[in-house]
Image (tube, rainbow over all chains, first blue to last red):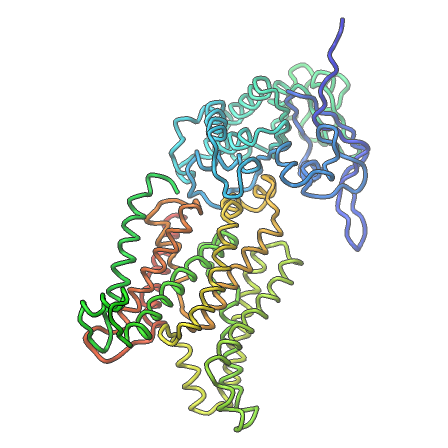
Length: 263
Length: 336
């Protein structure tokens, strides 16, 4: 059987993350070696304060790594010009957008900024791609609505559409399901799953919805106290990675159901 | 500019032209409409129109639009609806410069007093003051990443200015105090054509820098982290926006005195009319609307049919302050 060489979108080599200041270095995690392939949906899970956000901030070049390297499409993130990087990597952040006085279409179209001219004028192609992003996230009906008129779930879909419009190989979402009810949590994660499959984009998201992530992800990155493990969810279950994710006094992982249970 | 805004823009342009003519035709000396028209197209020489009212109307347009634009820039950059050119401390810096020249001249001795307080020395002092504050803000902004911190630092500059002015006033003569107070009233009518030309050149630089920043300003509507993720060079954009604001607000304060509330209120009024935050629409709209409101304020200040002229700063505050109150009330309603 011949298998095609997988297209690697993001790769880290011996990455060590944390904060360096004059007072010294505080390491959050080290020896991180992860590989994200094209079209994969990847979930990043771990306890609160374990360093998920620090890892995402480092991968997206917001913060410098302590050591090690990050490659996006075989090129070190440090070698990208800001606009070039914006054509490789788009983000959905946890923070609220500053102004909600934009229409949904205007906001999604802002995703085209890395491609537009100095005035930010939209070409016919930009408009087509924006409309496609609206269709892929099922929010065409909201097109002319203002962002302050939307619910949290709708707004999250709009932000995902914006990232799609940015047309990058890699989309990174920081806790896309916080503040959402159970239905919308599942909805958003199913949506990103479908997008990864249909568009061939690699989607990495951090989440506390471990149960849902196990069911949906092609691959998972699990951050623990002293190691970062990645692999397919079924492998991670069978090698007991999830068992030691949290202190055992309150909840335990049930390998048969793939979910956590209260003791 | 999108098509659906064609009518509002046509109306604003028409309003601007009407306000311009109304403004020119009002004043303590009444001039027949026909003569105003003739002197505008160069058929007649009317000294009052050509050397007093025309430069004053043009000054009003530059001041109103310039303050409106600098307010818009500050509100977007600081993501704060209550930001305006005054918050960066630029206007405070200008006031401090003027206070030092007018009130501080007592310290330099009587001989210099008359020499120092010429109009140009006030303009230079105001420009120097706002430039120095700009320099300080720029140094701070290169070290402090948080725009909120810069906002507070701007307020602190305002505080320091007020304190220094109080100390200076305590030691000043009544005459000097009066002169400073008069500068504080603001004035649109003191500019000659040559001064207006210099004013216009600096204004134009500020406006061009703003036009270049339109794309970045729209990106900043999502917040600094999103802006960065879309490839915006945050440091450079922030610098260009701050310099543009300083050029606009600094020169306006230098030439026309500290004119309150226009910078804060105009962008909000414009957003209410155009229902958008897209700077490609907002910028020309703020320009037109700022110019119109300033011409109206100046026309009111002329107190038609009387010989008095009210201080322009009082009129703009009377128009602007209710808008600020309305904003706060509305925001409260939105929050709760």
